[in-house]
Image (cartoon, rainbow, N blue to C red; front, side):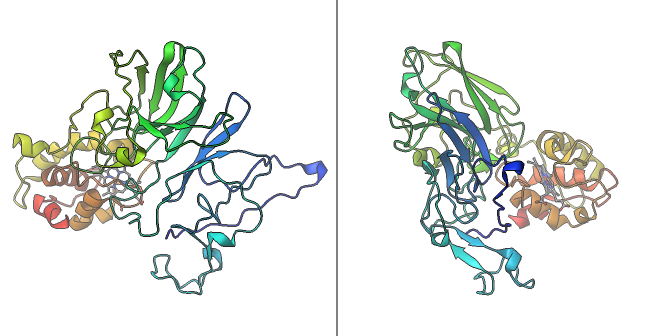
Length: 392
Ligand code: HEC
């Protein structure tokens, strides 16, 4: 069950003289909003851990959040009103005591606009958060949407659909619609999947498909043994695919006949236009170049090896000088004195700090850890390969 805190929504019963601009409500983290050709307004939003939604927006519609995630199906979601909970109850308490007000989805009152589709609803026994953190949860994290009709010369296989770019799987999903556009037909089909986070899609003249990618963040790993990664293959880029005759496009807009379930299963390399090597996977095992960091290693030498790796892997969030608004400040940070804390943070991640355990070797983490523990006012000695091995 998701355990989340929120405040009640205020629906403005405003007078004529103070009209509210509120058009619809009960949304959770909507990122995609676009009109279809016939004037239907579509919207996509992120669910908590299950139940991303594709909706049609209606004036005055209540879409259920925070009482309902996806449909009213009592699956994997309870509304918990922490503002009415006793102060001494931890949000991690399991099971939650009855003194914390909890509401199953069926307690929703009034009319709710049902989603067109949910991505994805799973049963209560799905191990939310336990497979590889949120990247392995059933949500796909839709960013933008593009309602699409092919017309005479368009991409026939995508005719009458909503295209959804998604963050977690670097995939363009094609959700087919009924003829009148008011119902989803089948599961979405996965196309053009790469190890990236997709933000937006646009189809230009000549059926060129442009996809914008995030500069950093976590995504499903397509190459390598891990499930999630923060190594993006085309960070901060616009990708271009050209739709051609069957198999005739050298940029390889290749159709995936995979269902989303299949695409989500370990690695979706088969529908990738281009094979990449994950630059950080098993690097030292392959080359044998790096030597283990031990308590006797020279701090300055190890830090010098870690510096460039920090710049490549960590500085987008933490800033090149260990200081940024986007992540914890590492400069002058006393927590870094604790070697085990640094090792476990980098291997396993927490909150929005991604886990690097599957992409970096123990020695690489030791080198980066040594660099951050001895830069920008920090002076805490080496982080050893052994420290990292112990935390796995
Ligand atoms: C996608 C952005 C991102 C990347 C990339 C990233 N971090 Fe972080 N890191 C964070 C965030 C955000 C936090 C704070 C997490 C929180 O409080 O929820 C954090 C926390 C940390 C902490 C704990 C600091 C503290 O005060 O508790 C350490 C240590 C750390 N990161 C090291 C690294 C290292 C080393 C790398 C590269 C291997 C790295 N991070 C890459 C976002 C990132």
